[in-house]
Image (tube, rainbow, N blue to C red; front, top):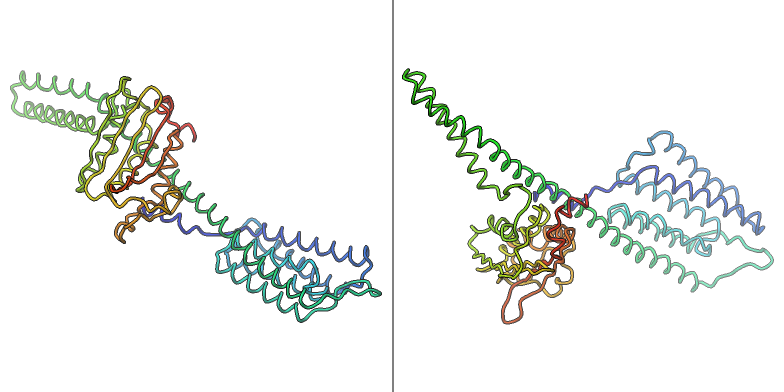
Length: 439
């Protein structure tokens, strides 16, 4: 499972050729409209031939790509970055003929870099940002005059142009970094949720197999008992040694099958009708796999005036509680405590350990995907996963079932982490598991 979940940490980033082409067609159309408005509407002297030639070259490249390749195919990051680099160079060429940084459209250098920050790896985004800055820097020194009224030419002071250059530089850096960070967080969340669905599906399959095994043990018990009894009676009445030996073999094999089915029924925590379990049974099933790791696990159930809650067998709850318990065992020095209580309105499970506890700066961030650090942990503990994707999955699955999950530390001088999981009782006892209903 660890190998499967690790695949979500490094998603492959592709963008469709059609997406890039649509953006390039939109840019070409906007450039033509701007040239027409400045030349015809404002009647400024614009070098139309070179400007239209650059736009025509861009349109020809778009058309060639659209004909030669399937627009729906996804581009490798390097190819997508190349097309965005062409956008920057084309814009630089147009700005060279139309005033350089004096042209208000010079801020469009930001667009290709911003697009790259949302879909491409950071190294390519940095490369495109450097290219845009280089083009802007070159345009500061080399450009034709800004198209303007010949009788009243516009002359901007150098200090203003330096400010424009710095604004473009800062806009490319800050905006692209912000876009990259937001997109990366959204991508991590999406991948972590995909991993959550994978884990939930696996747990549901295991639960279904467990119920199926218990049902099979129950249903096959009667015919096997009949075979056993009949073979034993026939064995008493048959005096032919060969036939008696065969009947004995049939009886022994039938008894062996009964023993196997009995073990299956004992291993399965589901009883008739195989889909409900008491709170104590749920806790014991979550605790059982962790009792042989050298940590003392103490389970306490508070005696309440109301009957013990009985819930639908929910893989999301079993996995969530089990994962949090596994983290407690990993970080505990000697003891883990599992306390549960209930009343007419609430069902609560509290899992605590005597480990180093959770670093204060991490308490408010627990539940974010790929967060994996506790106070005082060593490299070996970090390698086991710590508070990482597992806690995100556990918290997400438990909250889908209506639980409220909170993380705190013990009060000094005690040390260790405390995890409280609380449900409204009616939600906990809902006949249909919330995780299944959500799917």
